[in-house]
Length: 113
Length: 111
Image 1 (cartoon, chains in turn purple, blue):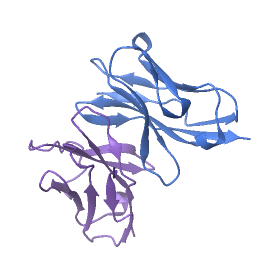
Image 2 (spheres, chains in turn cyan, brown):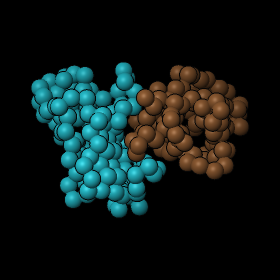
Image 3 (cartoon, rainbow over the protein chains, first blue to last red):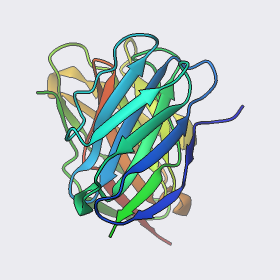
Image 4 (tube, each protein chain N blue to C red):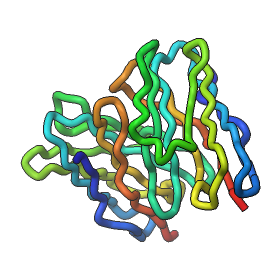
């Protein structure tokens, strides 16, 4: 079946602009995760959605970052007033249940000029 | 805090040689442990996982890993490396449903 998909694959933006990154998880997966991969920080957890529970936002680096998950499926990660240090690959993953195997999408490479 | 350490940033091996990538974790309870591989420009692919039971786990592409609680380690092994194994390898521990990753080991394979 289809895996996790993310769009766009690449995004170049100017400092101060807002960006939205989209994730389509595997159908039926109740858990959805966002991670960030950057040269300086490695792979970092950002946010986790599990079913209808309140999301775990403990990894979001600042209040410029937010995410939502509509209808228990598609998720959007929004970064407001982008900064150059936001440049990274943003990875989305989903799993059938929490604490299960996470399946990763190909990522969105964000470049902030 | 939970953490994962991969002490080797870069490893180079000859094709056909054996491989061991080291991973040490810090976790208070019984850990759920994972090894992922990332090829250039690709997402992360799960190689294998340990949840409980047999401490030697088999994965895809001929990889295996051994969980050693006494050493807080979960080292990845392969008896004979292929050129296509060149990639970056990440060890991870599940921390209340989110993954904590090590910094990765880049594997280079010479013919």
